[in-house]
Amino acid sequence: MAERQAPGSDGPDPSGWMLTFSDMMTLLLTFFVMLISITSLEPGTLAEIDYPEQGGALAPARRGPGSLGFSNPSLVSALAELVGRLEDLPPNVNLDQDEIKAAIFRLEPSNDPDYQRLEREVTDAVSVFRDDRGMVIRWDRAIVFPEGSAIIREENMVLLSRMAELLASLSLPFSVDSHTNPMSDLEGGADAMAAFGLSTRRSKVVLEHFAALGLQESRMRLGSFGGSRPVTREPSRGGENSRLEIVIYTPAKSSWKG
Image 1 (cartoon, rainbow, N blue to C red):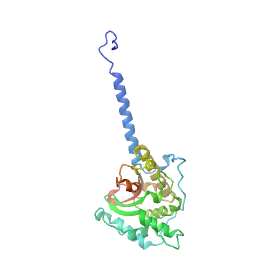
Image 2 (image 1 turned 90 degrees about the vertical axis):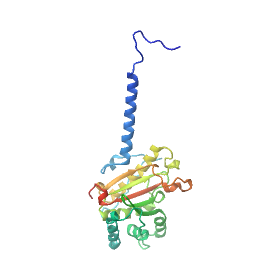
Image 3 (image 1 turned 90 degrees about the horizontal axis):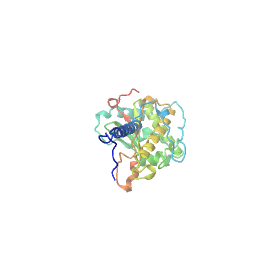
Image 4 (image 1 turned 135 degrees about the vertical axis):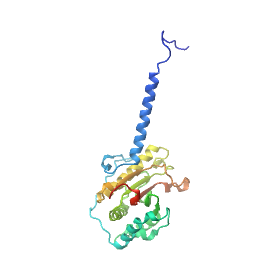
């Protein structure tokens, strides 16, 4: 039986519905602000982010020397000149992968006891290309992180340190953008917030490593995209979606000063 209204009542009080609608809009705005904050962070905010690692605490950034330098300045000069001319190149132009990787990583049997393994991983898991942002150095997730983890692989830490030396020599702003594999439950899978959290932790720990090596935080930007930008939807190639991209911005594409 329908409940009888009290005498003198003209109908249900709309204020209850309006309060619920107001609460809903507040929650939506809060959600969008949170998404914006984790996908585009301003420089100098690295220390304010602290995400728990799955199964343990987020590993602290490894400390290293603050003075950086190259043993092969001719290769660095050639690469710096290439980056400076990127605005004149068409997007997706084929770059000389061997020369660029040699300039970035400087792998030599005399300097690296694990030379053959490192060279193989760089050859198979790193690619360099140009898009409308500038130069992009794409790392497969497996060369930097175990699946589902934001702890850098200790045996490949030297590769990130060499990358830091390149960034120090160029004096250009850059971002570290992380992407997860939407087909992997360990990478967040269909849980968008878990995927965004993992990709944010990965970008953050790489930027912390760069900062520990002496790079200025004012040049850095953190990009976190979760599984929202896959490069393939084929399950057999799903691992390609989980990647780390270091984007070196051309001067015209950047509002930051090095």
